[in-house]
Length: 218
Image 1 (cartoon, rainbow, N blue to C red):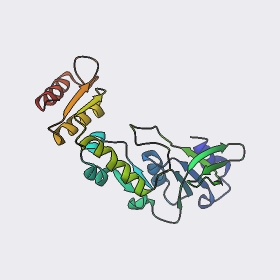
Image 2 (cartoon, helix red, strand yellow):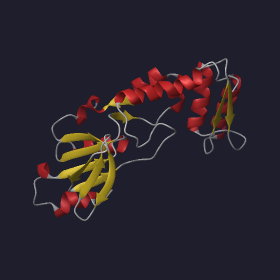
Image 3 (cartoon, rainbow, N blue to C red):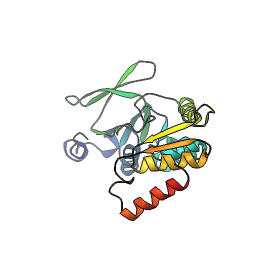
């Protein structure tokens, strides 16, 4: 975040709030919540490589039941009620450079063309990559859905007999459990350090989860 509060409340106080330009670079959870909180007080430009909110949650469900996952965790931006209105513009692109001297952001579109936007305040909420699907690659709605289906099919195809899940955190537990419950005939091996999964969880919880996974032959 670059001079966010200062830009909005300090240097540009002489300008009306409706005139102030806010750029939100990265339109995931943080970016969306910020735009909602600012409401219609400012002109907001959101920059996102995707045409939708693509959640990083529930890898296990995404691989084992992609239809259910999409209903819960894939939302077009226009489905958010507080993101409607003329105060918000969403540009599908990636940020190629930021010039803090003249308060401009340059973006790159899918076709390789570039565009420059000025701002009074800049919020960088690009987040982090998660697993194998949250990336900065520009994708349209069709490409996103194809990727979701392709990853799930990699699990269910007949030649996939042995699936290894590495990492004993919550995502690993959920992935191992969901894949095995959906594909009972496949071998699911779960690798983690220590005696039990879920480090930092209560010992009883860790034992219950380990037992649950053993009971379904993970």
